[in-house]
Length: 139
Image 1 (tube, rainbow, N blue to C red):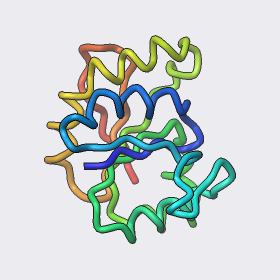
Image 2 (image 1 turned 90 degrees about the vertical axis):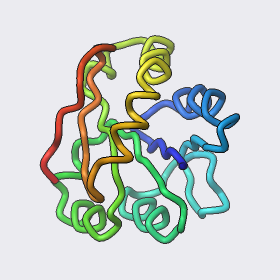
Image 3 (image 1 turned 120 degrees about the vertical axis):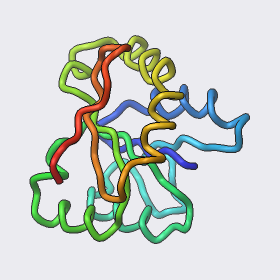
């Protein structure tokens, strides 16, 4: 399993999660550090969605961008790609990065179990509360 963090998230999140999951053969990457996919800090959402969809690996997306669900081109690309995602709740924007990273690490085992059972193309809001479930978001 590979985990993708887009530009609406801090690269710290990808690095922290990667340190946790890489011993299990998984990988967490931030869009800014994926030149082999021809992605960078200025890659458009449609671009990374299509590139991840073309990869035979199973990608899980973590984003802070609710617009993917509302922008016509991004939404269409998302549905075609069949990716699965966690969308960070708005509270992540107001919380220090080290606290957000700790929540992702704390919740990762639950997130991993949950997302493997989710349907392709689905998105779920990830609450900042360590004990909360996952809220399904309409795509």
